[in-house]
Length: 147
Image 1 (cartoon, rainbow, N blue to C red):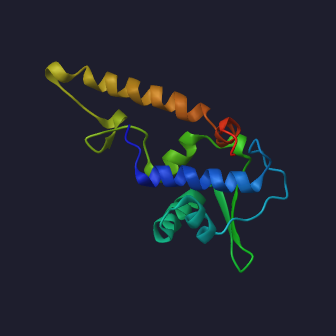
Image 2: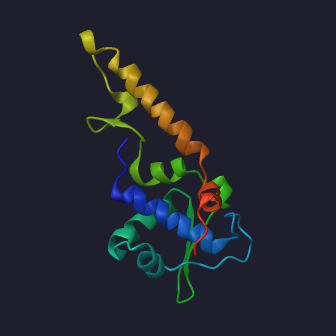
């Protein structure tokens, strides 16, 4: 698995939105603030033009709501304990594991290399197991206290 800058930025942005929107454990409190793209870009040191494309993908995937206007911004569509790292990674990057630019399940081999497909599928499954059971709330809860 290769973690691109896009995937890293998407997770950092989602964590920042989750942290702003809810309680310390990442659960929505109902009165969460909307987070502006410019604020996210600045706080996470992400180029704004790059972040805007990422936020669009996250919105299209149903992970963020966007609200227009001077008081607008972004908010999670569901609580942080119901959004997994895998959800975010798939929203901005497609499949979790690729082989020669294709999803692992589309890799095909013949002859002596036939068994490689099963290896790549097992790798994909192991990665999915970790990222699909790790939520944004888990990451917010596990963070070290700032001093």
